[in-house]
Length: 516
Image (cartoon, rainbow, N blue to C red):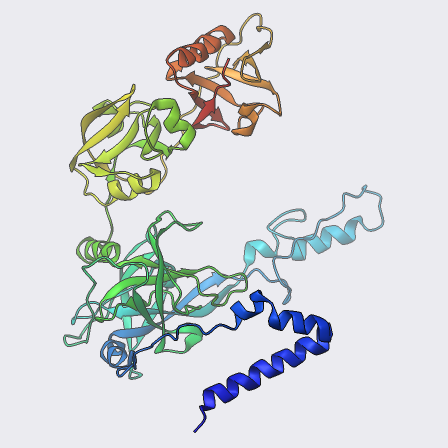
């Protein structure tokens, strides 16, 4: 009996050859069929062998086990309405400035008294007497104890007047907010009067990129929805978050999934779904979850204290770029560069200086500024830590006792105006393509002009920037600047470390120097 496979193969080849004849003409088709290239294309390839899958992957048993611990959360709250007679947005009419004898002057004044915006022209207006509007919102959560503690997102229950937990079987119970943590967007709520709730535990092993994850939640109010995917990446930093160690997953996550768990195949929580990246508001396969180790730590503090306390080092920091690494003699661009220690803070007390690079904490390497922030925030106030610093071309170690991080920003101290110089110095061109003048309002040198084709312009220096230090040496004149640049070249380094200030913010930049 002839093989069906070969029969179908011959038919396919025949149909292809016919297509070539029709498209290219007989001569071309003959050459194509008899050329060495064509012969190579139709040579028999090795057949791959796929083993039979006897137990296809299914999440059904996992879902049956964990679903009773996952809940929908319904929030009731109030907010000020901002619509004017059903319009979209706050009424903000710009009243014309009319002369007193204008015929419409009285009309607009009376109109403003009745409907003026935010108490503007015409007296108190609609904005000052905005009615309160009640609304309801939904999210997700999961039980972490038999006696009624649940984890969810801070943004789900923030400012809630009433929180209701809806269980998988449809039962509803009122919950109270135990504590919230805006920095990590986590919250713990409590249902009283229960002692035998099914609950889930957190994973203790690190999740790996490529691991399966199963998300359970309440998208668009559809409670008990299950989706699956993999861990796409770790350590993601997303805009608008003070915390930057998210898991990226591609399981479908939508509005209403916030606060819901992402499970591994053991039924352990590996993350709490908190945000999505979407150009249209719906799922596009990019979701972010807070890792289990962070959730466990924050949840325990919220249950015990109702709030989260974090260690405070007291430094302004930035990432170490390749140029900065070259300028200070580091082999690789890793660590966190101290822009300025806080006045009276624990780092300053221990001797940390501006320009130091923190490369390790308690022996654990620090990759970047965000890594240092997370590491310090994960330690308790009062903890003594050992910092490994890179300073003046060599490693040093310092011990620092951490204090408590205050979530509210400290008031900015009032700056006293600097005395004005009697005779301002003339602008002085430099060897690196920037023109400098003494800073009449404080320390350093102002960039008055910059060559747009220079390396300085390419690296981000701009007119108006203040140059405070070069190679950790303060500069107040153009001569001091040039001497510091020459000193860097004499040391054999090809990049100068520049401490600059822009709009009150201090940063460091590495400035490559052209060879003489």
